[in-house]
Image (cartoon, rainbow over all chains, first blue to last red; front, side, top):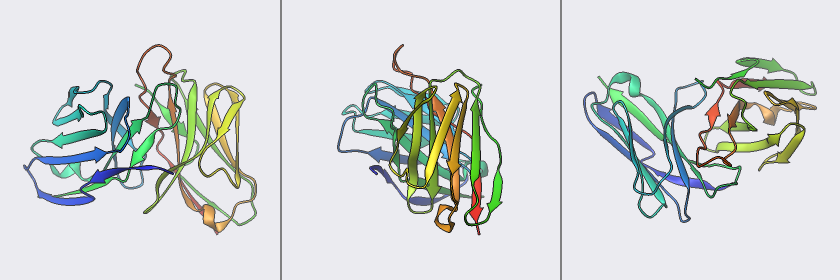
Length: 112
Length: 116
């Protein structure tokens, strides 16, 4: 099935650094979701975005719905060791569609 | 808080066995989904249900069936388990979007199934 392009695929960062990742598509989406998944666990919803240009925060996390509606960004500020995990995006092409399209994931490793 | 629970975190079954994976959500969501997640392949949709007794095939339905007799419960059935069905299985639910653009999809903790 279709997957969204997510970058970077993986990143090592130092504790305290800020992190940025993004998700891009060739088509328009009406909703963007960002998840974090720890090893062996189910994905946990971090942020939901519904309008082009929308900027939403959840603690140290901030996500934006791209103005073209074809991309979304997630930033993590002042990273800590428990931020380790896989982050992935999900986009819903249009209302009334059941199927989310998922990103390929960004694996984040934080060095203490 | 939305809660999606799955009946088992880990399962080990033998080839040819019939396997039932159960999922329950407590938020009165209309839509429920079953995915499998494999390294390098991401999340792949097996089946989904948009109402009681209603189901639709996802991208990889072969070898699976589902049942939704009650709104809160969605079961995935492997009629005759095979080794290539060893995977992480994730259930998810979300409300319908007819009342607005609120489409958060929530996942359960996952079931790691090993078929020997």
